[in-house]
Length: 453
Ligand code: MN
Image (cartoon, rainbow, N blue to C red; front, side, top):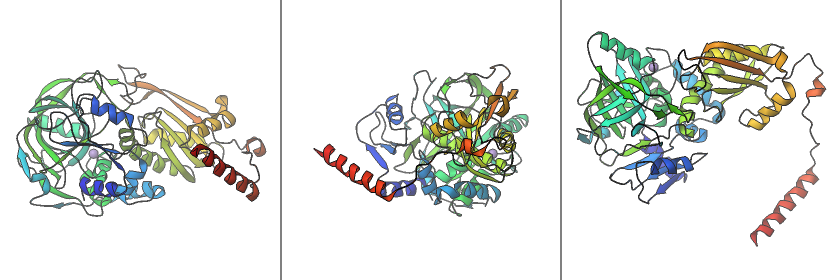
């Protein structure tokens, strides 16, 4: 399975908007992406100034599209993901694949985009990076931003997680780390690579489970690394053990500029791609970015909170919280105090989480006005508020202590308290009437007629 096959399905459903006008890879493509960000279609830029290659964007921009890609109903999504996390399956290794149709030596023909005003340079933002330990025992796949330095070099941001660890291990052995950087892969691969799995789990194997065994890998031409045989484009590189440069500033998930840091350099040894490859773009801080990073963490929160309360109905790492810092969790509460336990479980599951709200299941977690209503009518700060000072939070939180990285976490238990009379909290209903429905129906018909004139 490939990105291409998924795009064919989306094309049939009319979910792709084609942009035929000539647009610049510097800001213009990003500006148009931003304009169509909210619940927007997939964008296909067919004429990017200075390049022959088309650019596709916003592929995983809605929950619905992600569910279509995984062939799963929205209410089954979390279950499907946790099952795949628990049962990784080795993909087949193919001797050849469409990604090997063309072999190039540098980055000069790739339409890498410059997104925001003060970004340091053009960045690759949808890169799925594979690396394995020097002893060959541990494989890892993760998503990283890559800053364009010149046609043979990129700077890679390594948050101290798994790829960072593999790189540190290689460095100790005095070696560079071989990596494949795949751009334009099936959404299942993107989602697996974004998932918070333990060190040692190969995310390609999780992707393969999500694709029902449909992932094939090839060995790279110039480095010791695997990459999806059906990828659009693969960069073959080595993360230098010695060479570091200034990386950033760059707009990350919160829509604010992440600071400049010393980060390692990737030297490019080869570029392989399909003959008519599509370059995949992803708008930093856009809906797709928030969903790919947030959704797997909603699953973690859902799983963790499910262990302390009888039923979790829904989790939303909300848009306003950048899909990362704010969670809203709807539960069935059995006893007072369940709400607070749910909050603690959520903070434990997602260490970057800063503010969390727990509500009853009659509240729609995806409707923030509804959540605000629950806080307005069911929450008392003196009883229902948790404040945890000096906890470790996200490096992307501008308000956290920039030196220590410490932050204050706040939990809001906006579930109905059992100690107070139930009827005070009842959401008032107006009795349904078929006749009233009919009247409404007729009125809206009339409205249509008037507006048609
Ligand atoms: Mn990993």
